[in-house]
Amino acid sequence: MPMKFMADIDIKKLQRPVSYHDKILLTGSCFTEHIGNALEASKFSVLQNPHGILFDPASVCKSLISYIENRQYSEADLFQLNEVWNSWQHHSRFSHINANEAIRIINESQQRAHQFLKDASWIIITLGSSFSYRLVNETGSEKASVANCHRAPAQWFNKHLMGIDETISLLDNCYHRLLQFNPRLNIIFTVSPVRHLRDGVVDNNRSKARLLEAVHHMVGKFDKLYYFPAYELVIDVLRDYRFYDIDLAHPNYLATEFVLEKFSEACIEESSLQLMQELKKIAIAKNHRAFQPATNAHRQFLQSYLEKVKSLQEQYPFLDLKEEISYFSQV
Image (cartoon, rainbow, N blue to C red; front, side, top):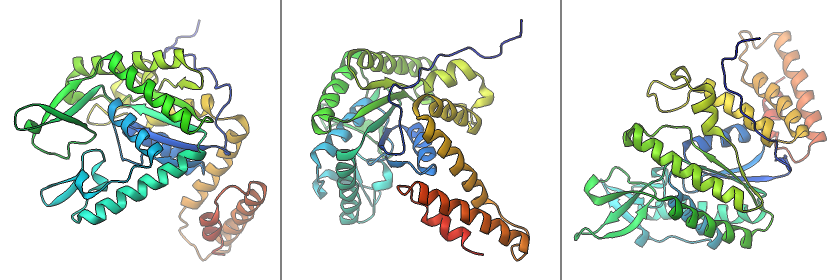
């Protein structure tokens, strides 16, 4: 009997897998962007984290509802810290030294997300932590939850470990709001395998356990909701620090590629998988740097791939291959 070095995990193929004809909104933790970047590189129609990276269910649900409502922010929604204007509901990539510019960037992203969500077929939600941070006033009373602390003093916040029922209530309300806005939506939940070691190992595991329980409650209760086990693939299948970066918290390149491979197998339709492989070959060729670009051999290489790209563009007119056609046209 052959020795086994990995636990088996049964990942069922989606009944109606994702295809190139779908628009996909991704939101949540930094691991969301690993999936989103891979899909974007493969020329899927995606919109990633219109609020920036978000970790807790309260922030994710609040952001999705703001896209439904096409909420427009104003200077009253900003605060200034260390000469920079920030939004408590957005990642620091939306921060700016000029308040008007910060508002412009935020509202452009809101408008883009609102329009994209109208026609989207899928939302991929990656939850990272059950810990939520709440602003407090001078008397110590809580004011509101925040999506990003922007390195503000710790005494400005209370740290709250969200309960399972609390998370389910938020997700349930958000799900119904989303389906009222766009009945075609399907949702894939994942829990991030990134370990929040600043919370401590014990509290990190408590936090992840609550997310898992809440998400599986939702998936078991409603149609059109699915779970992809990114967390289990890293924690239970790979389960080795060789698959983490030097901080021992973030999965490394090998781990991420392993998860993305399993995601593609389970969640992408077969014909789209084949197209992804063709596009991957073209991306590798585009990233190739010739030692002698003036040679006939390199010109033939460019011409060969130019013909392949043009053929793909004719066969799949919904793909945006302008950049690739421009690159390989340097014959």
